[in-house]
Image (cartoon, rainbow, N blue to C red; front, side, top):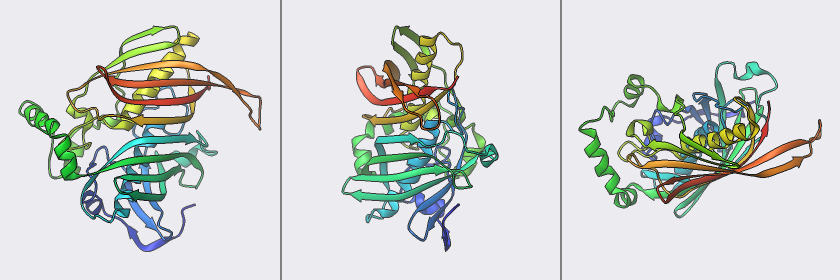
Length: 323
């Protein structure tokens, strides 16, 4: 169950948006509160398709909401009370329970995210986060590290991509409205979509595919003036490349998997206008002892995203095939 709260614990979005650059619809957590012990809590929606995963929420979407909550906690811990960019560059994800004991616990499509600890040291921040049902059943955990850049530093480094957005805006329907909720209501949420992998090629234990060119409309709210595909959305595509390879190796048209653990590294931001490709490789299998049943076979994969020869990010993951 939720821990005891302060008498007036709620944090308003406007307060947070003075400190971070992420906006709706990418920013989708609600009812953000700070508990008596300093833990940050938020309501977490379930928006994205599960793909091949058998879970209450996709691993990438869980990581998306938890990383945003962690960035809020880091921003509140930052002694510099000005707007900064919190760029997730390393993350370790672990499932505890893929499905709650009682399915009705997520019947309304909402979960509860927690950030119990956020620290900032110079230009690096870290956060410890986890996701629970409303009844307090822990589902998964995320440890994430961020590079922290002031708005001025970010704009100086990536100014070319802001200029690109200005050129695109003349012929684009991209909305940069000051009324963020109105903008969110007027347009379809791109983070509920499941863009297809194209040009898929599979040879033995390896897969390659294209994600096409990043469109500004795919990046709404991340970041409004410098649209870049969020690392959590990229993780969703990388996980899909692994499960697509898993299906092909087994000769299945469909299957359900349960991701066990994943470690992610982000090297570069995939800005609008950049072409993206993914590669996945099956690394092997290992037997895992199950205290409450027969031993299980866990499969290991490594997946990476590139823009041409430029590394964008990579993920090492392990999964169990459920069906």
